[in-house]
Structures are given as structure tokens and as C-alpha cells.
Amino acid sequence: MEQSALIEIGLPIAVFVIMTGIGMTLVPTDFQRVVARPKALIWGIVAALFLVPMAGMLIAILLGLPPKIAVGLVIVAACPIGTTSSLFSYFARGNVALSIALSAVGSLVAIATLPLFANFAIERFSDGDGRVYLPVLRTIGIMVGLILLPVIVGMGIRHRIPTFAARAERMVGAFGAVVLVVLIVGIGVSVYGRWAEILASAGPAVIALVFSGIAIGFLGSRILGLSGPETVTVALSISIRNAAIGMLLAITMMNSPEIAVPPALFGLLMYAVGFSLVAYGRMTIKPSS
Image (cartoon, rainbow, N blue to C red; front, side, top):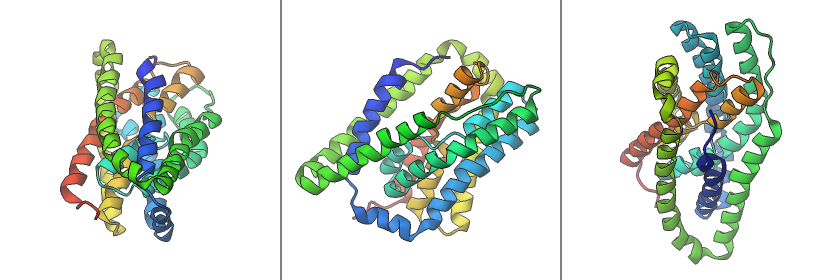
């Protein structure tokens, strides 16, 4: 199951441009507020990288999934938070600074947690003794190249050329919407020939994982008393994952396209969830003045 050129080349470039534009909307005080209220950041990391993988494990057990599908489900549940979660948070009127912090810190934490959960799933669901390793350099490269670097560039542009940054914000918003629509279509086309197989083998489990993640994000955030923007941001960080890393592990390191099925299906569904949460956020959160 190979990734299309849209994902391998076009998406990183588009995300870099979009993240630069989002950086133009940020000032240092945005991040100071996140540090001043670390509860949302800690909760988002715990929920996304510990509770959701545990939920994936439970779903695999309850549904009696085939071993390889079960392993793939746990792997995608433990994948790092996706870089495009910040883009969705921006559109949903969430806390973009919190989203960026979750992506950055989550990428580092996932270096340890993803192999841990993957190996545990292999031991629990299969007889093999294979070992899974997270591509550390790739993860760090994604974090720096597609999150931190463009945001720093964007913030620098806003600091030096504020009038240009104000005009560019609208263009970035329109460009981002087009990119997301094209991405959904592109992913759908790339797996068109295997729709029946994917839906039959992993569909119910992946759908259950998606809804479990949303429930964990909203319920925990409400219990902790997080604000509306923080709650939506945490839910998006749980729902938008770097599923490409899951497919990479399955295909290149485990030599199993079947294990890659849950990450591939999740990678398609998560954008529909992202748009739904954007709609929810725009209906319930007032624009910041």
C-alpha cells in the first residue's frame, strides 16, 4: 500500500506554507499562556499517547480482531499527533499555540511510547517475536521541518512585516481549505481498489477507535474544566494522527501490508472527523477579538 505523490511531496510543502501562515497569527504571549496553563498540554499528551492506545488494545480484544489487524490498530492509536492538527485547530477556533505544543511534545514522547505499545501488541496478539522501532530521525525531522521551523518563520514575518502578515492570513485560510479537500480526495483515490477489503477487515475497529478518542478527549477535558478552545484542540490532537508513520512501520519494518490497513483507513477517516470538529468549534466558540 504505497503513499501517493500527493502525500509524499505535495502535502509536506502545503503544510509548510500553511504552518508559516499560521505562524503569522501568533505572538510569543500565545505560548506564554500555554506554559502558564500546563494542564491542557499534559492532559492532551496523556490522552493521545497513553489512553487512546489502551483503548485500541481493548477494542482489538473485544472485537476479536485478526492478529495483524489488531497490531495495526494499536500502532495507529499510538502514532504521533499529526502536523495538520494545528491547521484544523486554527479553522475550529481552537488554541493553535496549544496544538503546536501538543504536536511538538507529542512527537518526542511518541519516540518512546509507539515502540512500547507496538511491541506489546505484537506479543499480545501474535506468536512472532519481531521488534518494531520508531524512525527517530524521521519523527524529529517532521516536527522541526513542518511545525517549528515554519511557525518561527511566520512569527518572524509578523514581527517584521505586520501588514503583510495580516493580508496573508486570509489567503492561507483559503489555501488550507483547498489543500484539505484535495487531500481527502487523493487518499480516497489511492485506496480505491481495496475499499471492500479495508472496510470489511478493519472498518468497525477503526471507527470504534475514532469515536473512543473523541469521547476520551471531550469527557476528560470537561472533567478537568478546560476551556472550549482547549477542549476542541485536545479532541483534534487525539483525532488527527501521523498515520503515515504507522504505515511506514508496517510496510518497511514489519513487511506486512495487512498491518498497514488500520493506519491507512484511519488516515482517511481522520480528516472527516477533523472537518466535523471544525464545524463544531465554529458553531460553539466565539471568534477571538
